[in-house]
Length: 259
Ligand code: IPE
Image 1 (cartoon, protein in one colour):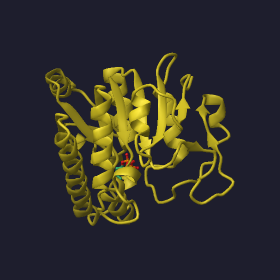
Image 2 (tube, helix red, strand yellow):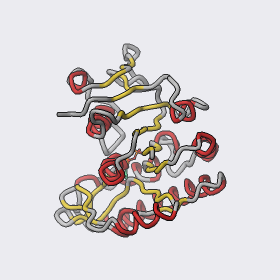
Image 3 (cartoon, rainbow, N blue to C red):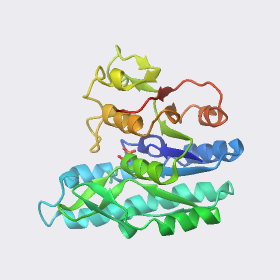
């Protein structure tokens, strides 16, 4: 099994509130179907989550009552996004169902707590892909928090032990600086623990769940002696397909673990 995250920057237009990139998701679903690989997809929230979360400062948990309707709004928006992602998978004959983390799990101090894996396991045993996503969720300590799709990826990685982990993004790979704002940015082909230390930290300032460096740290945490983690550009047609087929493509490969 291959674990894949569709980044919010690929499946939505991050600059426009609730703008779904339907054609891109349809193409990515087609690439997965054609590859013949068994996959589990997690997706980000993009402009269905980050815009309102930032406006109401949902990241740090409860501060005042004005955040409560905003939290409900985000949960509604992310569910709508997920339903649209699932529609595109079903259209390509990939059985999938959206599983909102806040409906079955809680967080504790920002960390997702999963004490019952049975519903997920039973779905995958049936051959139905549970599609989970970054969302705002209730929290035992801070009353609510944001759990990113990356955190969901880490949980699913522990649970299903995939052979590969793939992050589908809107850039060709990991850059040492933000490639959208810094012309000196250079792509890093291979990420190891040692290379992490030299990566700039100030990217994607609009992104409430952290920048590129944090995502790469999460990638490295999902690697071990045999499992590699890839960051690939989902806007480049057939790149995901080729990667799933085991071909060499433009991408960043993380390997070797974080220890
Ligand atoms: C963010 O999830 C969740 C919310 C802001 C509600 P992610 O961090 O996984 O989303 P993207 O991929 O950056 O859009």
